[in-house]
Image 1 (cartoon, helix red, strand yellow):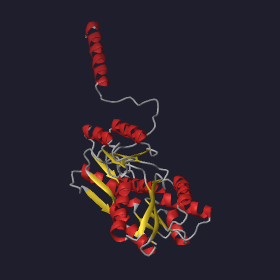
Image 2 (cartoon, helix red, strand yellow):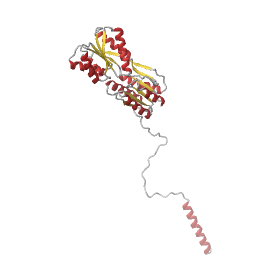
Image 3 (cartoon, one colour):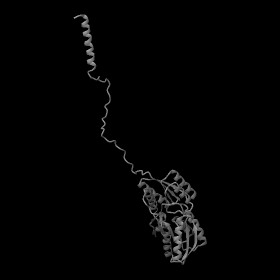
Image 4 (cartoon, helix red, strand yellow):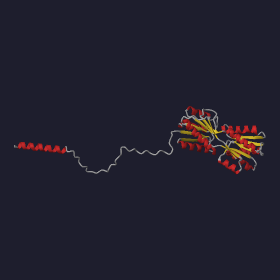
Length: 328
């Protein structure tokens, strides 16, 4: 074999060796170690967060109250809040502080917030009408609670039968004074349906069934205890021999009782309306003869429940009465 053939043979053998090594499929061993990787089961479901205790139904209600300076409306608010929490809806509460202008501003704010429904406890049955009409124009359903409105489109009114309550108070008072005597009537805020209806029920019963009694004074004390005290102080100076007093709410009658005590006057029969805690305590103490019991917590709760039902497409009554009772 010539030298040239030997060299060519060795060259071909070298090329064959390199090709065989490169095509062997062996993977080099890594020189660095890595942390082990957890295995993921592709069939496993990712755990979802627990649902909140109260599910968000996406409903926001606005509650406009005439005042929170009165225990009755505080209890009404609490009833509404409890019902809203149970239903899983948002409730925005605003306080008009017995000012119709402030209530109008509050309702305008609620409309701007885009509430789904409005629950309104008017400070004045006439003054509230433009606010209700604005809500109507915005497509927001309106419900009145405890006090009514004299205009605008109202889906439902939730309240006690105040006319019947006034008559209930009158019957008790007339029986208590034996059908005769001098009677004082302390009226609520002029323009409110509660003052109008309670006064109507009381006056109608007295004129028809208690003709021996004379209403010698009828004056507003604006549903306020301090005003009830000062107004009745003045009335006592002019009418020292008053037999009985009926007030359109308990705050005024409790003020009148304080005025009588301060003047040293006894023997007057006092009758109130609402059965707030202080009034019930006064009945138990013998200072207050009776009070007509409403259920403000139920009024608030029914307002919320009725609004939710209507928003869900249910048909609701135009008027939903809440039962009354006499505490004596």
